[in-house]
Image (tube, rainbow, N blue to C red; front, side, top):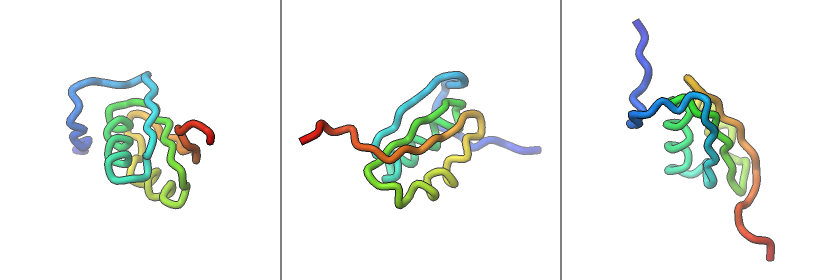
Amino acid sequence: MTSTPSTGLNTDLTGTTAIVTGATGGMGRAITARLAHAGAHVIATDLSDADADALLAAAPGVGGSVHFFRSTSSAPT
């Protein structure tokens, strides 16, 4: 018997898409994992791709998926 980790979300997010900025930080990584476990397709972004592999390994997308892109959400200066 296998069990899925508790996401803390009571909503099935299958078929939805979420964008998480700051995704390789502690909170961003946790949010990305919970959304993916709830079934969402997650677009994860951050300034650096240094921790992208760790993010993707921590959020295997039990019901959804995670795609990482290096980018910034700030306005150009």
